[in-house]
Length: 219
Image (cartoon, rainbow, N blue to C red; front, top):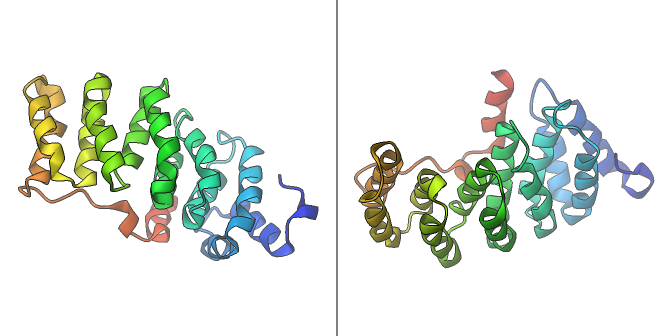
């Protein structure tokens, strides 16, 4: 836990509220920490570093959400670390959203992570975040990954569909000719989305985070 002597009382109080939120999202605390901005980033990362996600399911999620609201490049390495945790689906989703909200400033770390992470699940989360950050760098990286990361063709195709750049159509069509039937489904779907024949996947960044995570708490 962060040393309270070096953290403002207001931030310290909000951090405690994060650790106690179980029945409903800590909306006020997250808003207050987001307003504090960079001042809150260090304390949030320190708090996360002292937690065991196996014992505390929700505090790491609230920290990831808050870091996404602050959008600090300083938090990118910490958020990338959350993508590598085993059995961390909800936490990884929150980290993906936070990285995407951080935007292009997250890309240098994200691209390196998606290229080098040894675990396929971690790489798939990385691709998902890249697909939510529009731009030339994201497009080039994901198209290149189609030839580099054969195991994750489907995840990369979905990320390209999220990116929404129709320049991905040609490499996706070329890939489709090489896929077996199991691999082909997400590639076909991505092509249909980019051709406008199928609605795009819902963009999670357009849905307020309290709405998304309140549903998860109720589950």
